Amino acid sequence: MKFYASTAFAAAILFSIGISSSNGDVKADKLTEMYSNPIAHGFGDDIEWVKWEDAIEKALEVNKPIFLLIHKTWCHACK
Image (cartoon, rainbow, N blue to C red; front, side, top):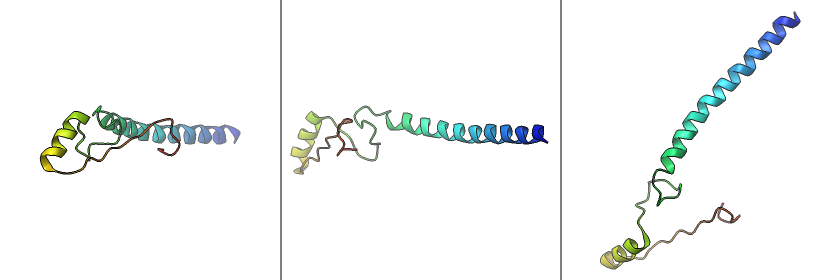
């Protein structure tokens, strides 16, 4: 009886590891996608990110303000 219980326990652990590792692949793909644009710094491509020099030029052309996002990895308020 102990053999069956330990076998079932081992199977359950292997099953849970398999499920968690498959989610890790999805997370890894998402992280790779997020960091594919070096200007976005992980914030995604939903925003049309531009370099500072280009932003000034574009803002002057369309007569609109610039939204400047400042984020530091060490800043607790930024997280």
